[in-house]
Length: 122
Length: 174
Image (cartoon, helix red, strand yellow):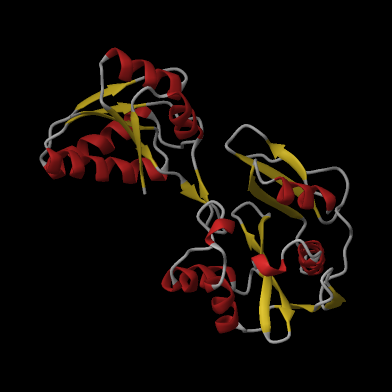
């Protein structure tokens, strides 16, 4: 399966990165990692790339890494359609002080607009 | 994240204790939480899964205990509605990292639509004000008209309307 993971540097996206790499290895999926601009994230693109490279190296897994600029949700979807991905994978949201699950704005946009299956990682 | 708070103070409300008869004639008392941990666990184990929102309360007992541990810390404000020896409602204020507090309220289904929620949330806001909390916010699922109406009634105003969930805020002191 052709899987596209979108990450913007939020805590849940970093967790999703590790889980998605592990899953792709186990399933033999073809994984592409797209770094998007998350306005709420404190990590910049370079830091994120370093993080991604470190995870891939530790796991000994090969994945294509691309950077998408502009509106993160729509850029991700456009890329997914153009490159004919089967599935989009994203972080599953963060929790509030009270423990409520709060989906990120990118996940909300992608869920509502995607033509493919979307997986949120918890 | 910058959040817009209303210009007007909500209330101000009196904190606990409060006693009243609900609309079904049941005697209800609201008090500050006072180490009744096991009774609250029991209340949440009876909680109707349909009334869950955004992943809380957790469904399994282990999850409930862990979640309550976080809510019942000293820096949080907790009030409980009692019917005799049974906890039937619970409302909480949990501090965020920006000096404000997140609010949530839970009432067992059998005790809903009897006026307990209004008393409970007013009492919580009163307790919060007495504890020096000035800013309170919450998120609520958009379709939940009963909840949003309650929050508006006691002084909350919508502040972030862009996501799946509606965010609302109230000010407890100037």
